[in-house]
Image (cartoon, rainbow, N blue to C red):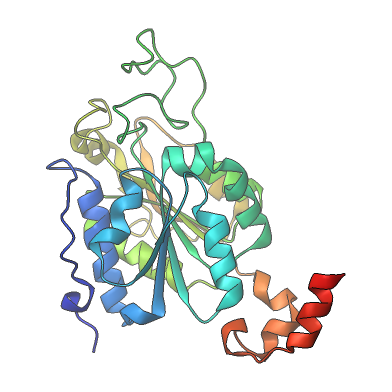
Length: 283
């Protein structure tokens, strides 16, 4: 049996008191224990930012990589050992900004991993400048006259590129978010969970109360996530009412199934011919 203690880390946590990342961390622990995933069977990959610190606070395999580069590293790990369960933790700046190109191509390839985007609409690690998801007109220390670009919509982009599992969560509802993470990790293919995550230090607009007044649960409304057009409408819904839950779910062949050699098992367990490798290197 897997328990919360199996994932407990002694690493000092330096998030701000009340940070929305705490709810995401708790939801991750609950989901991993519910799925009975052993720590040694899990890999968490992250980039740079407050969201990227999340793997430090879990005792499991982790890889903390470059800003915006978590997805290509996770893809490489999946190719080397496609039996691994892989979670990617990224912020809205880390994933949709610096890592935007990798975000698009991981979806296109349909790599079997789960991406958690901690979306606080600001750069929380570097003192609150606008991120790709900051709302138009939002005032920040570096945008004193307000943001002049439209916000990036990760859910709509993922849908338009053919993502098979697209969901939105809220870090203020740990039980609901844990369910999303469980279902995302059980899905065969690329799964995106964009998480509304309040930044208590630098975003005084999108607070816990702001989200609680607007969020409504698609699970409670018996919404069926099998209609692409409906999913796209929900992905674009923002303001007085914001849907949380699974917007769209449809499985298709995963990336590693297209690679014949992986049908023999994970690369790490396969024997290789040193002479053939040398021939490739010498070519």
